[in-house]
Image (cartoon, one colour):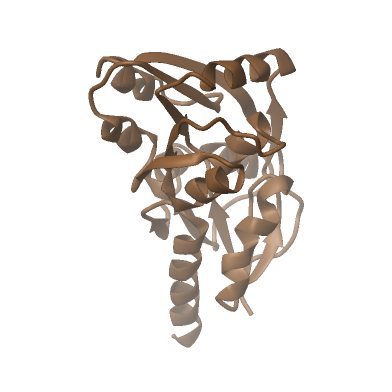
Length: 228
């Protein structure tokens, strides 16, 4: 059974690992990041702002878990990046008004032109071009950094492949381990670009971005490699 390194933070590791296990692969938890939430005052402010928004933008389940840990999301329409984030919104009592099929840039463009306030809680390091896309479409934008993803060196364990869901995870991996000889999979073009900055070329790119999609590609690729 091929062993696949799951590089997400511990709070999302099991959810990320499930699709790989379902495809007959052995997920190995090797966290390459840790999550540092913003101060409670910042999180409380974004909750208050979101209650009166025309739209709330959600780009990850982690954002929902950090800002609304009790599941009490406001009853305003939410623009979510992908089906996984949309599911997290629904489970937290939110109202999904738009599900993007790509990343944050595509979702910002999908909002189109409009009036009113868009509230956007996000991770540190989010491309400011995403904010510009929303603001130049006529919306009044309120954006806040609600958590930071900090790279950390992963444990040493033998694996056949590695799955990266963020540029930060790639940076964490590079602190301690090479990629030579491993099948490397990434979630989406942004993570692929980050890998290129470290001299790597992904064997697999999941689009639209999801661990489910990457696990499917990984299972096929590893099976074909084993049969050669």
